[in-house]
Length: 119
Image (cartoon, rainbow, N blue to C red; front, side, top):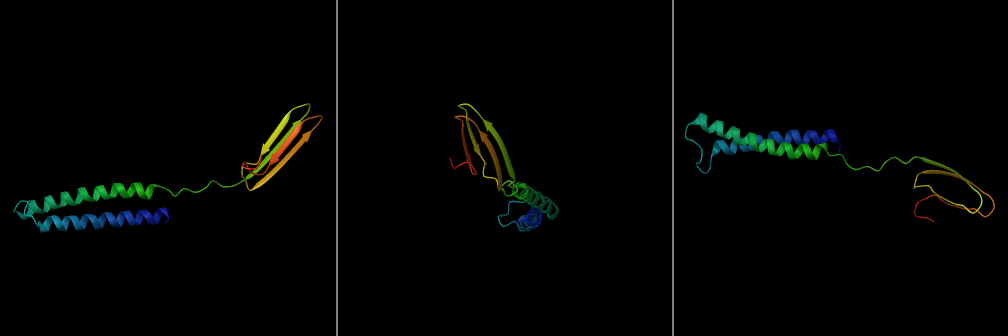
């Protein structure tokens, strides 16, 4: 789900949570709120606001988190020269395009691979 669509879901969901909690508070099924209508509406609005804030914070965390995408694959260019008894090991690192060049003289050794898993 795209990030803008996530924000639409969070904003709409926050509004729905507020309205549901507000209506539940005005209904007052347990008789806990004051009898006066203006006090009952104020308490219900506070309850609805608190529940909407909690839902909004959790939703903002969810909407703000981006899906993990792999980094773009690029080109790896490696050049090496070895002489004497030295040894060169080159690994492409799993990139899409790997270009490796090596030059060895005498008893030098060169090992190349296109991916890090291959020796």
